[in-house]
Image 1 (cartoon, rainbow, N blue to C red):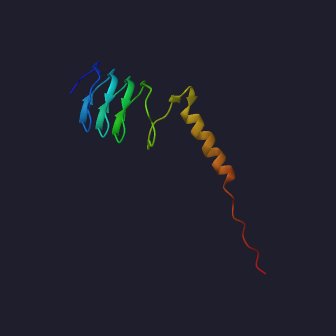
Image 2: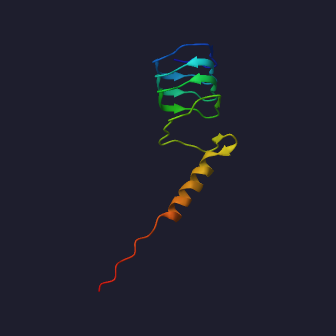
Image 3: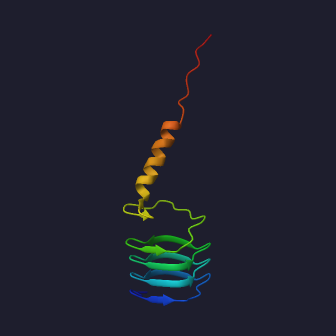
Length: 117
């Protein structure tokens, strides 16, 4: 299904199931997508504003070049994702993660071998 450039305003898509679709340049404003399941979707250059994504699940979704404004990202879990160029409030996510991982490594104590008595 090719819905390239679709504009959706004030829509209720609660528990929607969408798969195998090209939604490049989708503009979605004031939409309820809570509980939605999106799989194998191209959402490149998505413009998402004032959207409810609680309990939504996105798998194998491309969000490259997208902008999310006024969205609630509470309890979001991101796994196996390409984060190059991703920013939150102007901060590079990839760089922030690298800093956190580096600090964790430095804090992990190495165990000393006990000397026999």
